[in-house]
Image 1 (cartoon, helix red, strand yellow):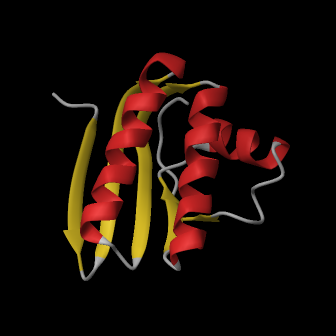
Image 2 (cartoon, helix red, strand yellow; image 1 turned 30 degrees about the horizontal axis):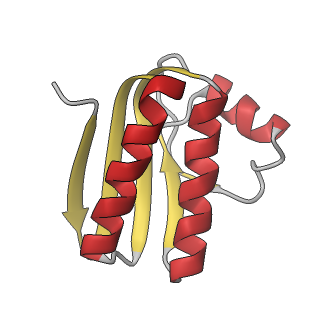
Length: 109
């Protein structure tokens, strides 16, 4: 199973990440999301991390970078599926009040 899947609905692009998101995989995931955004030009990117079992600082960088990319394109950005550990990482990075988050899910990040 691929660790990154895409879906579209009403002009919004959802990128669902599953498994471990570490520095070895973050670059590939980042490139694939950016490529899909360039091809589809969505009005919003929803980054769903509900299936992520581990995330290091590269995962935080991926989230921050996609937020910035959306902002520069005039698209909205939402983070879905962030559990309490992911929210703590965002809070410590000063992003919890900046990045819009959706529903939380059980699991480990």
